[in-house]
Length: 438
Image 1 (cartoon, rainbow, N blue to C red):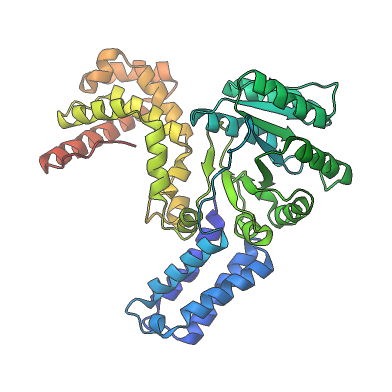
Image 2 (cartoon, rainbow, N blue to C red):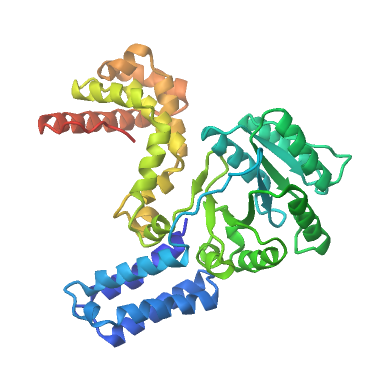
């Protein structure tokens, strides 16, 4: 997420912080570089120009120029302006009013609406809601079937009726949902490959007949500036309430995220970061600015850990660590918790101080989990509890059972021994009250 943009900004800001003394000239030269980086990231040129002007105005102040750490001061100014650019504060979804509440998803074909519908349904169900999905795309082949598959994967019911118009489907779904005790409807509406007047009129009719609490424009972040232009067109027709950026785990240059809030004056409410049904994050402008500048996002990381790790399990593991009873079975259980939190590169990128250039050098392959799991699953219960008994013949048996080689077994056991040693050091120095949690 934003890796290319982060890498280039990191280089420019490193040069800026390297100056012993800042002058108007080297600030101006550096900001020209920042502007170039933003344009290369597909940020709208008007947005980039306004951003640089705002930073330059604050950076040229005497308070910054005379500061003991002027480089850091300017980085802070850029961070603050990035936060303002993306909306300053998180804007939550509004589901107050009539029941069932309605979230209407709009956007071009291929933007990820159907997948997002399932993610939102799961997200709000986990928040205590009782949601259902409404198949309002009656044009794209297999669109209804796709939504039914998504609904089945997350355990959410889908309402559809191929014999009726999209407007009637939505109206009837609200009546039926209310009778059946559901309190949240999510409309998966039709899209096109381009702006189509017939489609836009249909969406306007659905809005008028059902009065949704939230209309969300779903933007494919991979399309960059095109997503911003499309959002402006949808805004003219629907006056939507917010934006969801999808495919943020891909090679997106980040221009859409940095431009769409300023151009539409509508908040970004969620970002979708993967294919899994839980790969959805609330959008926090300040946290995203920190990620872009390589400052990490420890708050989101902690929130993910709290969602993935059960309190009782964490306390049980802490007691084991204090008694130096950490086993390979415990290690295996922790891997399962980490996997729930999302891709490794995204998790590591949230740690403060981890730069984009460092991430590039690391080998962060989630498939390595599969090999470790296969090795541990090929061990007996006693071997997991007492790995010191794993001799040469046992290693050969484990390698055959896991489809790996003996070197892989040796590497895992060596890493595990290092982890045990680290835990002993924690106890030795008397660090208390810090549970070992991923």
